[in-house]
Amino acid sequence: MCGIVGIVGKSNVNQALYDALTVLQHRGQDAAGIVTSHDGRLFLRKDNGLVRDVFQQRHMQRLVGSMGIGHVRYPTAGSSTSAEAQPFYVNSPYGITLAHNGNLTNVEQLAKEIYESDLRHVNTNSDSEVLLNVFAHELAVRGKLQPTEEDVFAAVSHVHSRCVGGYAVVAMVTGYGIVGFRDPHGIRPVVFGQRHTDEGVEYMIASESVALDVLGFTLIRDLAPGEAVYITEEGQLFTKQCAESPKLQPCIFEHVYLARPDSIIDGISVYKARLRMGEKLADKIMRERPEHDIDVVIPIPDTSRTAALELANRLGVKFREGFVKNRYIGRTFIMPGQAARKKSVRQKLNAIELEFRGKNVMLVDDSIVRGTTCKQIIQMAREAGAKNVYFCSAAPAVRYPNVYGIDMPSVHELIAHNRTTEQVAELIGADWLIYQDLPDLIDSVGGGKIKIDHFDCAVFNGEYVTGDIDDAYLERIEQARNDLAKVKNQAVSAIIDLYNN
Image 1: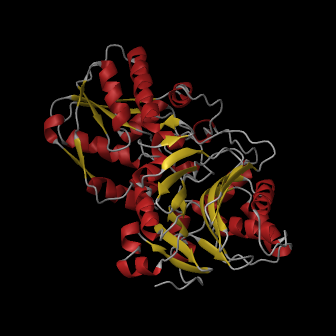
Image 2 (image 1 turned 90 degrees about the vertical axis):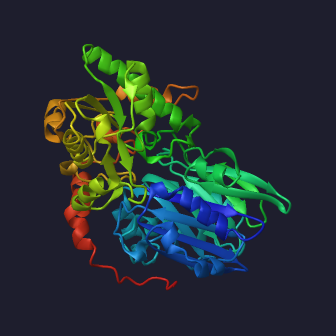
């Protein structure tokens, strides 16, 4: 999970890119980077850390140019080194920089092809560097001194035929323009919009519509699966479908947790989807526990607030804020390593005793992945004096790894894997537990005005939309990306990189 942004403006875009990355910070808090283009030169700043820490005033002053791209990273393939912070750069052809959200599932085959056939060197473990080199090679074989939009779209078409997995991409071709494209399944989100200025129209590509809203851009639409948008340096916009048989199957977890509630993804309001999740959950509680004795519904901030509010309304039970969140602690779900997550839950949340003492409390969370957070929170609720603690999840049980850009690579780290609901309830310490049903979740997200027939629900049902995932692949990523492997990889951080201090 990462955030991407690209802007073709009429004046310096450094501040706008910075602001957009700040708005997309929830998508990745591990590293940030911006590259701009001016008079055929590239200006780069990227490093590990939050946006506000990576970019100081002196860095911003150097990032000149009316065209640029940015990235916030949460590492899902590769490691957490600063060398793997994005955007990535290749000097041939034209000088191309690229930022990517998602995961390629055939990266080993591609890396081999790049070396043996394309004669290109990949220096990191990042699949984004592989993707960049595939795109650069496909643009290079066109052999044009001045590439047209047709050349760019032809290169994207070949990327689609070679790359498998989830990818939303923004790339800058130095001196020519910015291209954005989305994988043929549309797994990861990407939108584009425009803003009118006195100098002319500016265009922006981003992971979520909220980045456009905050900067005063008007959303044009989401990119369709397999579609590419190309905006020239002069400000001409071209779009083209570049995949042979695209099919919209977006990741449903975007609506459960990853996206901000004020975003609209594929025409669906994340906020409305989460309201409907709460309604469906309330209906299930009334079906399964009609005699429930819930005194108060308390959300686990922030992502479950919307669903919890609607759940409480539907049940006719008081809704109360029982936990105060420390704003300066990052999202624990996307912290590398169980120990860091465990420690941060206590730092992040504090219980208001008044709301728990002597009450039967229903805690609502967006999902239960590893079970670390909810176990700790249930314990906190009991310490605050709760009589009984019930727990419900706005998403179904997460039983399978995610391979398309969310860091859930190891089944053994998923608390619901090969366990019943009762067993999970016992492990996390809840008196009883309710999960959302998958058909209800699908209906919550895709049941509004905009109808989407198929979602990527692999984490819930094990059905991988790209069709190339087998047990051997899952075993490989588990070995490479489990918490223990991450700890070992942290030592390797001296990989050659563009010096940009």
